[in-house]
Image 1 (tube, rainbow, N blue to C red):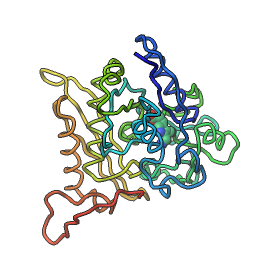
Image 2 (tube, rainbow, N blue to C red):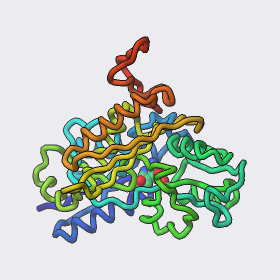
Image 3 (tube, protein in one colour):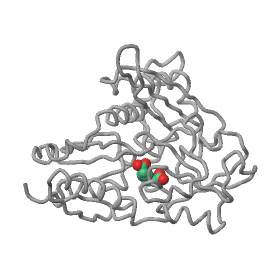
Length: 327
Ligand SMILES: NCc1[nH]cc(CCC(=O)O)c1CC(=O)O
């Protein structure tokens, strides 16, 4: 087969991830060439992610390159991919995922519990902000964007007391030695899909589909499918204050999927956490069922832009459209 042109964003994290995918494809006997693509999300470092249009800013340039045949496959961080399927494209492989948890990098080796009230923690993610404030430790949150090294520098240079990032990104970049606390999902649930990669291809490209299929990890795919179905059923985007984490667990006579979800008011004043377990082969249903449960129990009141409950109770108005948060 001819050389696979593997499209990637230019950031250190993105090229590390795509190099990882390229190495696995090469190990399987393929020739691979990395093609660097600049995205709007990389170009505009100063605008808050929310103002940039939330979902998809890192993704659309790679998708255009796929559609136009400039690349044969694109490597994305799955959590940056909008939940809506892209016309004509398919997720050819979802490789085994890195640790999905969030991590704190704080001054003086401190954990969240050790940071004093008034300490300022940097994050550009409403999900992280909401869950950090909901801990009730009196911390403050400051908007922070930029690549991993820029964000870490804010702590080492003393501008912030701490930053919260995905452990997966720090691991891949070899920066996890700076982590002062791995945040327990009991307190801070990661973003749906966090720690996982997606290899996107053209849906009709059977050669590429076969080439990348060996990279797919079915357990990871089941977990992230459940997490993303929850997000989709809430009609929330990747910048919504919604956390989700699925695990494969040992059931009575076979493996099952356990899904946790959290919807948190962005000011941390209230939160709803629920979990459900279901069959491993029906992750979409599990995600949708947990979304319905969260909405029934009032998630919509915490985050006004979420979907209405599927069975509206007396007196409430059923909205026919929902704007994704962050749009
Ligand atoms: N939104 C940026 C982004 N997209 C994926 C990762 C980390 C790697 C991953 O989650 O797979 C990050 C950085 C971060 O959240 O700290």
